[in-house]
Image (tube, rainbow, N blue to C red; front, side, top):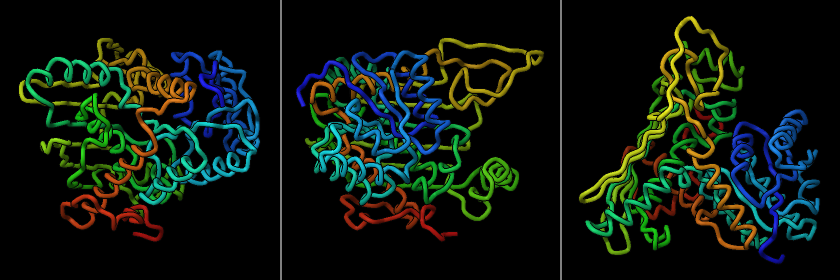
Amino acid sequence: MTHPKETLNVGLVGSGFIAEFHLKSMLGVRNVRISGVFSRTQAHRQHIVNVATKLGLGPCQSFASLDAMLEDDSIDAVWILSPNYTRLDIMRQIHAAVTENRSKVFAVACEKPLARTISEAREMLRLAEDAKLNHGYLENQVFCTPVLRGKEIIWRRAAANAGRPYLARAAEEHSGPHAAWFWQGDKQGGGVLNDMMCHSVEVARHLLTDPAKPRSSLRIKSVNGTVANLKWTLPKYAQQLSDRYGSDVDYRNRPSEDFARATIALEDDEGKELMIEATTSWAYVGAGLRIQLELLGPEYSMEFNSLATGLKIFMSREIAGAEGEDLVEKQNAEQGLMPVLEDEAGIYGYTDENRHMVECFRKGETPSETFEDGLAVVQMLMGLYYSAEVGRTVSFPADDLEDYVPVVARVGAS
């Protein structure tokens, strides 16, 4: 493969909510074409083709099998956007097609989290490297526009004068996921801790990392986690899940946690102690998805709240509207005073994330977030789950957690 490649031709694996988010963000990315999509349902694939066509990102082809897409010469890179429980098998297919010279794919990007267990994440990384694929971990919050700008200012102006930041706080909350598999511990890999804490721990670790040094310059010393079931195990809400998703989601007998808290102790390469505090919840009822970030140092601080928007809309009770998410993701009301995110794909980081991945893949450069970072995130998450299960702080490295499976993800657990 000769770099740079003028246009990167991307094939999407998956056609759900997150795939459409990525499509919208690609409008802000140059030198890219969405050339194909594979998922299990033909109607869903066609929807993605239609959206890509409408946005002028194609021509995009619907593929009835993953191998058919991988073996098509128009595909250079694959974005894995399918449910968590499918990702390792997809990576195995990509590895086989590339190593058997049936595919010209030379790069792969994977949505968060990289895998459901440490051993799965390590295998994702091994397969990518064995096939000599460039690889990127799609952690959008690292690329959020407030994070990019805030970190740059803090480290250039504040840390340079007063010393490095020492505490990062991150929180993400909303009223619950979109699809049934998110609520199923074995398929998703856990509950809200796995689904959303993956964002919080990585964006916090990123904010604490000296921009002149690699992420590996920070060493995880210990983790302490707490999980709880606050809302969705209550009879009324457990019934709502049953009504919405059927018998596959049974929160009376097989719940996953809807609240999680984490405290992570780190050390930089000079031996300075650093801390991460993070909380996540599926039990937040407000205007919609709320992301809160803070970074504290000796003489300074930074903060961001995604719902503290400049644009707000008010609608009286006389204005009736259909349920939707046109103002903000996970919108919970259609009346009253509501914040509006004018560019969700940009503010949440998808545009800069995809711009970065496309340019790195196109030029043959290593992305700033790779499968190695995805593995590190899963290691932190499994440490937090184990800490919550045994009720104590877990010291790192924690080699005995390689095959650990959280309680809510164990098949047959009650």
